[in-house]
Length: 386
Ligand code: PLP
Image (tube, rainbow, N blue to C red; front, side, top):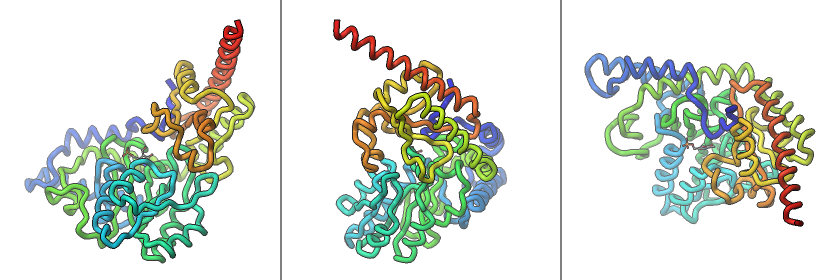
């Protein structure tokens, strides 16, 4: 099976696996205990935090280890939604955010949730954004760095600058950016969330970056771990594996992201020739090199996914958390696509290990599936006429 669903999750990379095995065998002690072996693990844990600070471009003291992006986002909105409920201050989101953002904002900010204007590719309209920041009683803005369904990149640096100028906090959901593109100082955003399993690290480990001067803010309460912000024994082996995966992906993203985009473009060109009428979502806008969301000219996406599965390729109907859910993609709806168009959308997402042959093999499989489904359909309609 050739896997093309890396935006859903990735396998543990060999370097991460090595780091995890090494730590789980030799550095499994509780970093909060006081004997020397535990102090050694505490030192390793803090070295991991320092290395992440270097990679992300932020002071290591701002990094909190979590179980993943969903936990970090919930902590941010729970903390700020409740604290500022009385002042009626709102959260502004782009309508293409991941459900962990939209649902957490709905729960903790209730009616104080506003929407940013986006263009037809899903990118935040910066001019309208400035206007909203000036008018609204806004406390926090939240956008993704890169969209999980379309790969569209948001101008997170400009959004952070605008927020800082207006005294508004900015949360950047970097779940799909980290590990695919150079981190490029993304740690300078006020809040950042990410999950290790999206870039070759283990599941159940993640990063939350908080402002340096934060107080009275907790993801979990309990013990004093993570400066009391996230109580619970730290998973040092998981953290060591996440840092190893991040280091490798950062090196690759600096050296190879451009070349990888050209593989994806060759694939898109080939699919266009073989299944004329296919649309590439957000084509012409800045996108992740590994992602392409195709609106197929005919047939529902679930049929495409099953057919391609039988031909040896794992692709997705959209985001992993909406796959199997028959409702059309809210991301595409926000971008102006009709429900019947979004029901024909298939998401393809690759990794650093995906080769040119893998991409071309998938293009050929799409052509074969197209022919088979067209033939099946013609046969069915002939039978119906009988
Ligand atoms: N944000 C984005 C953009 C994502 O793609 C995902 C996962 O699909 C998440 C947040 C949530 O990540 P997790 O399920 O690891 O908490």
